[in-house]
Length: 157
Length: 136
Image (cartoon, rainbow over the protein chains, first blue to last red):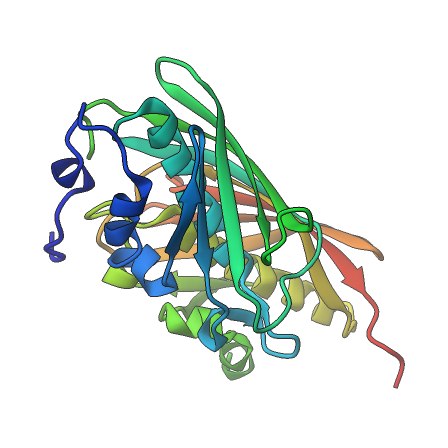
């Protein structure tokens, strides 16, 4: 491929444990995560929190300064995806099957957005996730997310 | 079409989206492959595909509202995205279809594809609130 970045699997070998802070150094630096400036905030056994700073070029409605809906989708996609690897304790190639976002309220112009992804169930091939986005107070969510990921073994491509 | 180009918001311009065509009265939005839309190496990020679907959906609903002579604003309530195929290193297209436009809400479906429109890489299903603009 034209973009010579290391594959995630090569820096996080299977069985070596999973460190979301370390992995986000790559996911938040290159590609779409890099474009959005995704930052690692924290994690637990089955959750990972990331954040994106408000930026003018991420706005979908210039009249209000409201971020594109897809910025929240990207944030929740990465946070929920990483919550699966965190719960698994290792990196395994997987792809998003589907993701649903409910927007409880808009994210105000200028405000940083946090996204917490939680893996609530794992089967042999599927990771079931949910999560929410907020502006700094998790008790005041701005969006809820739910979705599923399917692990694809070694068939990364 | 130039009026539609001015419609494209900052987010769409940042990802180099353009209006490529028109299909059944709705603009077809194109997005080139680049590092800034890449997820795992060689593939589009699901969030970038979702962004293309979103812009296509908004373009379709604006077009549908204007066809009714309405200048109402819209507010997204939710979205479900199905990811069906990996997006590879080539141009991606998306078009929205307003499946129902009522007075208070609209249902929109958006389809993203690369070479073959019959093989979508993702579908988005969105609900929007229709908000009457404050009377002037």
